[in-house]
Image 1 (spheres, rainbow over the protein chains, first blue to last red):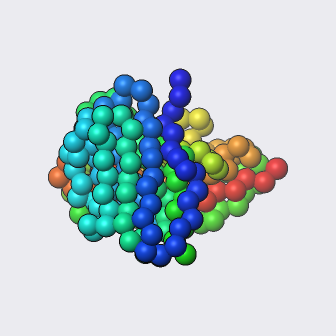
Image 2 (cartoon, rainbow over the protein chains, first blue to last red):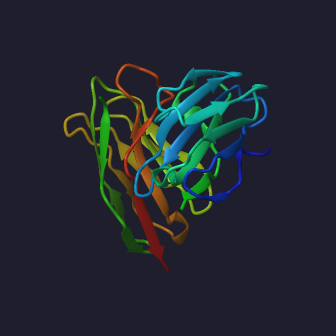
Image 3 (tube, helix red, strand yellow):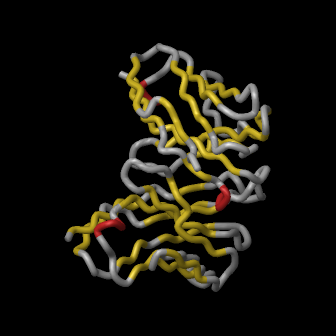
Length: 116
Length: 114
């Protein structure tokens, strides 16, 4: 079956612009997670959705970052007024089990965001 | 809070060489420990895990033993292959639960040459 997919695979934008990153989880997975992986670093947790609601958004760095999952499937990570420091690979993961342990999360290939 | 310190890379080996990637942790209690692998162009994958002290996780010829005496979870493989070339991450959950929210090391890039 299909895994987690993320689009676009690469996104180049200019400082100050708005971007949207999309995640399609595995069908039937109720939990969805976003992580950010900066160059030379491990992934850092951003937000976790259970169904349509954000169960934990403690990792979002500031109010320029926002994520939605209106129908409990596809999720969009939105970044306003992008800054050069936002450049990173944004990873999405999904899991079947609500708040499942990390060994239940399936990761997508990521979206590489470059802010010029 | 809980944290991991991972051996910095890159690591370059010849095929069939022995691999060790060091990982030490700081944690309250004895949380589960994980190794993840990221192959070029692919998503992060769980490689192996250990859920308690003295456990040994293993998968695809890789092994790691949860050693509380040395607070370590080193990744080893006896004979690496070109296909093992990837970035490897050590990880653990944060203090206080929230098991879905992992803390990762910085990653170690492994290149295996034929």
